[in-house]
Every structure is written in structure tokens, then in C-alpha cells.
Image 1 (cartoon, rainbow, N blue to C red):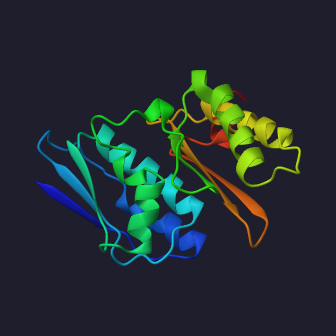
Image 2: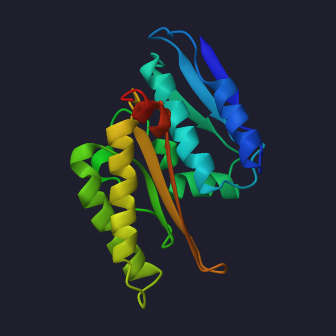
Length: 196
């Protein structure tokens, strides 16, 4: 069976989160099932779109989807962006997720699924990448510490069955570095309150 998920152009975070929640799988899929994510109506993707979509796709994989496909308009900016950040290949069987830190863009690090043993190396790569390519005049050691702390919090409190994802992008015109981290876990308040 083929599951078609039409990705809408939602620019407001609340609408986007509602879409993600309503699209999450609820039953196990068969080993023959294919999930196709259709980006043809999308004109622009924010970092939070990519991290939450990565969690959604990973959840479909954990529910048994055999293959993940991405559909885009040929030669569109979205197709170039998904290809240039390796997002379109991330769920293929031979893709090396642990070392996917190359992007065709000098302002973007590709999507990355964090693992506890790779948090520090990823934080170092993030700091070095943005120091080298985008902000050579800045001390980005606080960036490294922020990434480590955020990912350790998710690792310690999320209880997500699929982990979580991080995506970073520098916007030169705005002089803004955006870090988006997403997981489908229980949340820090729920985890902390379980101990009270």
C-alpha cells in the first residue's frame, strides 16, 4: 500500500504543529508499504519544518514503512534544497547517517538524528562549520555548549522511541543562525513531574 502525505505550505508554527500531529501514524504498517511525501505545493521550508518532518518520517519508518519517497517539482528550489541538504536521501537504505555533515550550501548543516555518543562531535562540527563558513569573526563556543545542553536534555528527558533531529541554517541577510531541534517524546515537564 502507498501512503501519500501532501506537505502543505504552512508558515505559522501552530498550523504546522497541528498538521504534524494529525499526520502521525497510528497503526503498524506492512513491510510492503511505501510512504511518499509530496512537496510540490511547498515554496519555502523553515528549519522547524525539516526537523519535525524528519521526526514524522522516522516515525513512519519505525511503524514499518519499507520505503520513503519524496516528490517535488523538477528543478524547483525545494528540490534543490532537499537534495543539497541530503534530506531527500536521508532515509534510503545505503545512506550513512552518522557522517552526513556535507551540504551543497555554505550556510546549512544537513539534518542529523542525534545519538548520545555523537552529541559532542556534532556540536564541535557545528561550531567549526559556522565559524569557518559564516561567522569567522565571532566566538561560537556558546553555540557548541547550547547544542550539547539541548541535545543532552532531549536524551535525558524525551523518552522518544525515534530519538530526535537537529537542523541548523544561517540567514546572512538577517545575520541569524537558526537551530531547530525536534523530538516526539513526552517532554521535560512530563518527565520531571513523574519523579514528584
